[in-house]
Image (cartoon, rainbow, N blue to C red; front, side, top):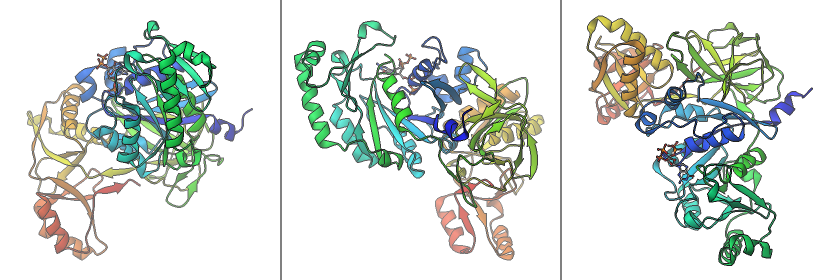
Length: 528
Ligand code: G4P
């Protein structure tokens, strides 16, 4: 029988961050392939526009006709259990992405070798940095002509202020790609382009000095490699696991997701270097993963996974203890006990009933709306995990309903979708129609499409007279009442009845803040 700490040591919970088109989907697919989760490559592809405007799992689900949520994929490799959490691939930065990143212990940053750091890579990296999430870098598409390798590494160091430590090094690139050299093991892995999409790796115990290297990659490439490796060793720090785990240094791997090249090294790298599930901060104290009692938090809610049922799945990350199916956990926000009789794991092949789960694991908990993003469940102690905020939306629009008879259904749809955290809904106190807020404008297309397909309601979004929202609070009730009176046409409530100030422009917001200095305006709200 393995102990709880053995189970913890064998788990890696991570996400992939990248700019669209860098190769996240392809890499995910290949990682799953290594985990034996998908028999055939080419299965997780979701294409073009569909992939951009809808959440990834929907497109994937459609394409494959399976009931798997690609939000979480669990697979095993060389004795380790990997939980890969998908960050939605929209161009827009979404809150969903942010919160998913609160549930991982490390991330892979995928870069396109021809493009380097792109806008979305940078944004997502900044989110990881907030919690010092350790980042493993994968420079993808080395089977195509890319940028100068040293340039790419310099760019990472300079633009992200992150030390880099190459673990593998490409031998040639594009048409001249011969393989990669593993700096940590003094070993060459050859690329065999003739093998197409199949696993094209031939490990070779040829060290840098060996004439064998000249024979297999050619004298010129061997010479260049020797020179480059010398420069790498002189110019970049050696891999330092503490610096990596503190989020200050990133080990760098090179490869081609498409050609399944360098992917095994990457996966082994995560197994070897990335941390096992770590301690988590709650309001009262830090919770260690090997504590006996089960605790965890909800970081994502997905409604309407099955169009025939209006159920939701809450994605729950276990932070401590051994979970067993049927266990009763306390729902801290309501104080009620919840018996978890049908939680599911997300093995990439299918959903599977979770009998036992350990820290770092993600379970799906079907529910009818009781569980919300940010909720903590705990076996005994009254705990609230920190760090799962709601952001003030950056874009606000007013809902336009084509059929006024459907107002009630529309309210339900907006509330359901807000519960998933893709959007926020505000009810102005002057009685006018709902204002919906999102972090990026593309989300409105997703919302309209989903409202139509899942609720059969035609609704659009039009310009709202507001540009930004802030939660407001004040310790003094009388001042708060005065504030509300003075700003009647700006006041709204969020779906929990929380008071929100909607500003028509930034000047108005500043003015309101100056007029009422004791009122607190906040752009984020922690949910507990
Ligand atoms: P994303 O999820 O990060 O948006 O990227 P995705 O994996 O969908 O890859 C984007 C494009 O880049 C795809 O081509 C994919 O085949 C290609 N790609 C991914 N990894 C590699 C690689 O290692 N080498 C090369 N040469 N190409 C790679 P596409 O033509 O846009 O998509 P599709 O029509 O093939 O689906």
